[in-house]
Amino acid sequence: MKTNDFDYHLPKELIAQSPVEPRDHSRLMIVSRVDGSIEHRHFYDLPEYLRPGDLMVFNDRRVIPARLHGRRQGTGGKVEILLLHRLEPGLWRALVRPGRRLGVGTTVEIEGHGRRMTAEVTEIAEDGARTVRLEGEEHLDQLGVVPLPPYIHEHVGDVDRYQTVYARVAGSVAAPTAGLHFTPTLLERLAAAGVEFAFVTLHVGWDSFRPVSSEDIESHKMHSEYWEFSPESADAINRAEREGRRVVSVGTTAVRLLENAAALRAGGADRPVEPGSGWADLVIYPGSEFRVVDTLITNFHLPKSTLLMLTSAFAGRDLMLNAYRVAAEERYRFYSFGDAMLLR
Image: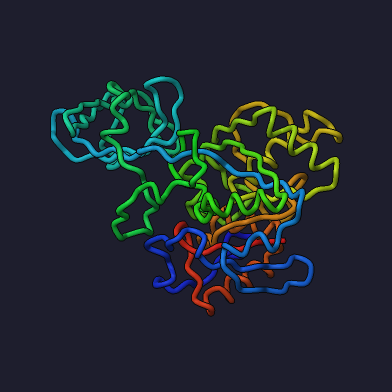
C-alpha cells in the first residue's frame, strides 16, 4: 500500500479547536469489525460496550512544557525549540526553528518569570534534529509551554485540559488523545462494572502525529520513543490473555507499546509481554499482526498519518475510510480535541 491510500477529505471546520465539556460528553462512534455496522453514541455510554473482566490499558504519560522561545546569543534572533526527549540530565533531542541558522555551538538564551536558561546545540542529526544541552533545566516548568498541535489555532485557557486525568509520568510532547475523554466519575463507573485497569508509559514524540512524507509506507522511519512496562501491568495483561479476556487499548500510543513489547516475545506463548523499558520505533500498517490488543478506543486522525494506518491495520482500511466518511457527514469533531471511536 501507498501513503495516498490513507488520504481523505476533511472540511477544516471539523477540526476541533477546543475540548468538549465535560470531557465524557464528546461523541463516540461504535464501529464493529465483525459486520461493519456503525452506531452513534456519547463517550459516557462506553460502559455499555465493555464486559466484566475486560482489561483497559492506559498510557499514563504526562505532557511536559516542551516548547521554548528564546533568542540567539550574539544576534538576538528569535528561536523556537521543541524538546523531543531527554537523553540524560540536561541533554535533549530537539527540533529547532530556524534550523538552517542554528549550527553546532550556537547558544540560545531563554528568559522569563525571573528565570534564565541557555540551550547550546551540540550535535545535528541526519534528519535535522538537534542535540541541545540545557543549563538551568530546573526552570523548564516556568520557561516552557505545553506544545499544542499545529492545527489548534485557538487559545486554550486551561492547559491541563490537554492532559488526561490519570497522567502521572512526565516526558511526552503530545497527549494520548483517546484518554482525554475520561473523567474520574467515568473511571469509577467502569471499575464498578468489573472492568480492570493497567497503566503503561510511552513518551510520545511529535513524530507520531505528523503525516508520512514517503510514498512507500514501509520506508517510513519514526523517531524512537522511550517506553516503560511495569511488572504489575505485564502480569495483568498476561493473565488476561491466558484467561481469554479482552485487552482494550485506550489510544494508539498504548497499542504501539503493547505490540512492540509483544513483538519482542521474551516471555514466549504463555507470557506475550514482559516488563522492562527501552526505545520503540514500531510502525504498524495493514498486514501487521496484533498479538495483544482486542479492542481499541481512538480519536479521528490526520490523513496519511501513521495513526490512521495503525487503525486501518486493526479494523481494515475500507472500514476505516468509510467510518471517517460517515463521521464527516455526521459532523463529528476531528483530531486531538475531537470525538472518539470504539473499534470492537
